[in-house]
Length: 113
Length: 113
Image (cartoon, rainbow over all chains, first blue to last red; front, side, top):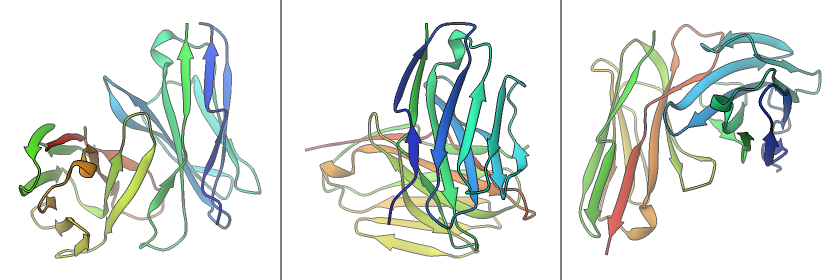
């Protein structure tokens, strides 16, 4: 069965631009969450969506936003990019039920120059 | 605010030796996860621990959970070089509903021949 698919794999953007990242969860998974990984801050939770509703949000500025579509695919958007936004962005999907773990995609490596 | 502390953050050990990584978390959580990350790669799920006293084993890795002490351990038995990686523990906030993982800073494990 197909895993979590993130596109694109790599991105280079200029400060001030905006970027949209995409995540397609495992078929049947309705929960999608996003994480930012940097060498300094480690892995940090951005937000989580379930059935098109944002249920939880991490401590990130409003420049970071996301959405989920009816097919459970999710996008996250970062506006007015800053150098500090350079990171590996990971999304994870989870099935329903306590025993389900989070399956992560390969990530999108964003570099802001 | 949910906090997760791992120790040690860096571990260099010889093949054949045993060692334990510790994961403490600050507030009640209903699920604890262990992940492995190889350099430049995404997160690979190792274990999902759901209840007090839970113990899971896969090969040379064994994870346990003590919810009363808010402590999980990842024990490595007779380490081999292939286990060299960064290991993360993560928890979800108890209370159901919203999801999202809070990660420890990771333990960078190097196993030398």
